[in-house]
Length: 195
Image (cartoon, rainbow, N blue to C red; front, side):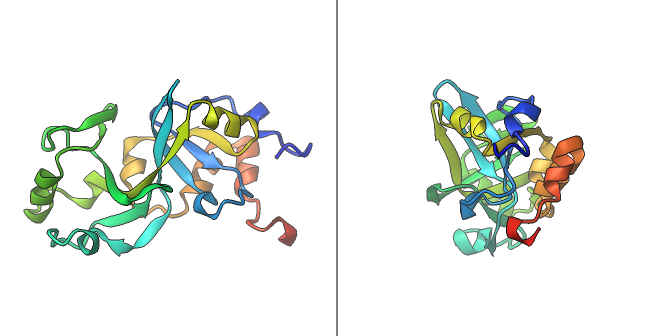
C-alpha cells in the first residue's frame, strides 16, 4: 500500500523465516490469499514454502482418504501449489517416522500409512495435527519482492496457534496483537469503497 497512507515495509521490522507467519495486506486482490495467514515452514536462498492457516475447506479428512474412518479431522487449503496433494503439520515426532522438524515441537511429513493407523486407533487427536491440500511456495527472491511491494506483513506465532483449527479470524487476531498501525490495518474493510 505505497500510496502515501501506509508503507508496510517501513513499519514491519520482522523478516521471513521458518516458524513465522505471512499476513496478507488488507486489500489483496488474489482470492486465494485474501485475508490469509501463511505459516512459513522453510525460508532460505532457494525459496520459501508454507501453508495457509485460516482457509478451511468444507470437507473432512475421511472424505479425502477412504481408509480413514474418523471424521473429526478438518482440512484446509494450504496454497495453490500441488493442490491435489495432502500435507500435514503435527507434534508427533516420536509416533510418526520420517517427520521433518519445522520448529521445536512442530513437524511436517512422516509415513502416511502409520498416520492412518494412528488416526483410526484414536492415538492422535485433532489438536495434534493439521491437514492441508496444496501449499504456498515462492522461488528464490520472489517472496522478498512481494514483501517490498507490501503484499505481506511478517508476524510471529506458536505451535499451539498453528494447530488450532477453530480460529477463523486469525488474520485480524494476529494484527490486533501486533498493535499500533497493524491493529489499525486489522480494522480496514475488505472492500475499501465501503469506507
